[in-house]
Image (tube, rainbow, N blue to C red; front, side, top):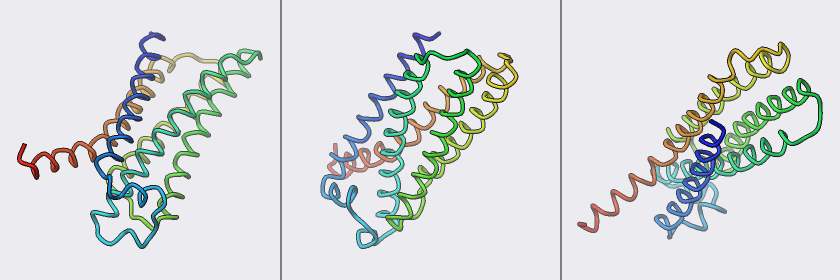
Length: 183
């Protein structure tokens, strides 16, 4: 089971990097605006959607890398089992909430409206935060492993759903590009 989750985690990481690279390649003329643009670059609803989807994809990728690496590091720390569980689940909860704050903050800095992609990423992050807080209480405080299998599969499913949501916009852009070129 752990090998499957590890393999899936690395697959998700690789696909997230590919999505960002694909967005940058597809939206080549907007590349600088995506990273350094502001309100002046947002002239239409399509511009808002493009920037919001890019922000969501970049934030998902960065926070997935950070939280996965942090999780791997935390489980190697020498401390009592119960204290380690509390620290692990609280840290993962904090990462999910930091993701939500970062996504809001980046949209606010850009004066960008939230796309459907960004909203779904927020919903999934909030669901994951609730799941991690529940697991913190169950395993960290009550020392009860009843929800552990459901927790593992749910976190995996939420990560896959987040990846799927941030994939939709680049796939649509690629399909438009193919249609435009008549391929």
